[in-house]
Image (cartoon, rainbow, N blue to C red; front, side):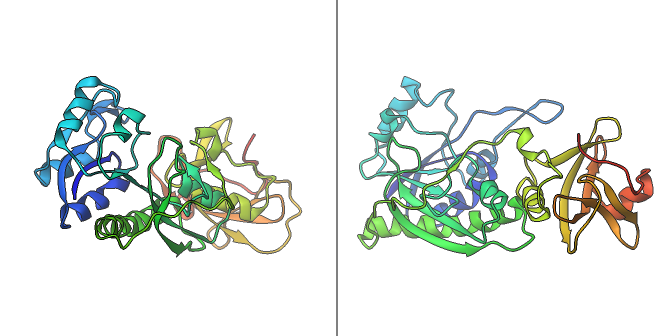
Length: 311
């Protein structure tokens, strides 16, 4: 098949590489324009751009998906299929162009976690299983007929960043198999189930704020789900921000008020009281400093038993 690939972030890179090595022809790659990023606001290309250039593929970075010149450019390519991975919602004017349709890859078991942040919300909710879904695009977001789904177990202490790496590699294989199957007629679209529908809305920084009154397991899931973004955090020492990247639960009751430091030494680590016990913070990051393990943090900062974290 003749394809147009659309994607922007690192999640889309394995899919582009896999398709470039497949029997299908990539007529063009569409990605976002270069944009300012980081503290220095340096203009930076999206991760897909250098990979496209390395593979010597035609690259298009439209200012808008509704731009008439861009739409005309795509129509001239005569693509059989648009392949969309971690990209913007396509307007109807684009969905009408490819002869076969448009295929999307989504990192959840649809209809679960439709939306912008499925991996993070699966961890926030303490799910033990997730997966990837390839499906046909329709004007309704993430609601098209399913082509292939594959399930994976979520590891107990796995972060969103670690899970994303696994899912983007799995997704690349699923995507190629889906397109092969569409071409061969061996993959038949199936309507999404009416059961298990849930949403995965876009995250804000406040989604990472820790409420120490919650149970240890819920806070642990927040910490690993928010790693690397938006990042779990709490206030400490006069309103400074302390980011918390990794943790582990400590069994047993705790009589101290939630948010109270109950251990702060090399033997016991850094432990904080929660709504039902205590949580050990194993990797943290004070404002303006690099991420560090708890031992390094305790050596360099005045943290004492009885200190309160959070508002």
